[in-house]
Length: 398
Image (tube, rainbow, N blue to C red; front, side, top):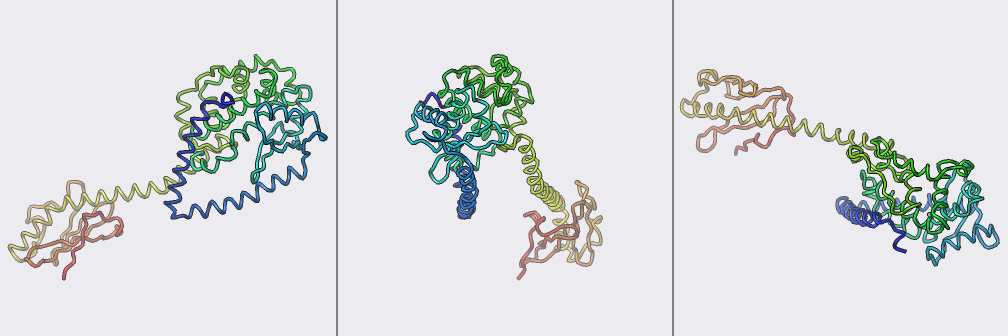
């Protein structure tokens, strides 16, 4: 039965599993085990949410059996046998309230396949249609799509990767649905019903519908498919008619844009873009202040470097004359540095002030044990202690 697995699912499944496990390892180590507590809380929430769904299915749905809708149950059993599923899931039919859908789920080891009444009614004259939907959902269970999500979860939101893995899984499940059908056209019509509706699908020209896939290579169609968890229905119908059918290549530039949009699952690319904007906003909130801090430190470091010669000349002058110069000009020093910063000398104590747009640095002289002038660097007006570059050092005098 390996031929039922879409090859890309194996590759993408392995990639997402390895990356997901590495991400979890990093989260657990990086959070000092806090991630395990979050996992435990998440599992408790899962129990409440999933138990609510299962209770709804069991309390309001109808379980298929040999005595309850035996025709549907017979199709279900035949499909399980066709897919070599020995331990059959529980099968239910549930009021879909107008929705053409079916789904698979599980809870604490028990598996379920749920058919919505609208799907069954729409396919009343088309047994292959119901068989396709049953096979598709059994495919999710057979391939354990509902079991490995937790391990892969940290990386499934990644652009391109998460969506590609989801689409590959759906293609695999379409192949399972096809295996339960008598003809490929029956499977294609089941998919076309999702597009044309409960009644109109009966008059649909399948060949013409599949031909529409030829128009899916444009920028926007490529982009929205690359950020979605399902291939276009036209492509899905084409692939069940011919599993080796070549699909139109997607637009290259759509890949570039899609690479920026996180995968948002059923919420679609619009929500993914909102997530992207939110992430960009958070990163900007962190990065912009950090960048501004970096620029400030860089300018202050330049002020320290460019004023070094001035401090050296002041120190030499004082050591020789044992007095403070009356101005910088007598040392042939310009009060303006090459980067535009200005220097001011306090002739009472030889303190040097270096000011620029980012703020002011203050250099205070002191005499060491050898009688040499050393300089203490501190922050002045407009500069915080955190903004001082490493080259701004404070002298510890005994």
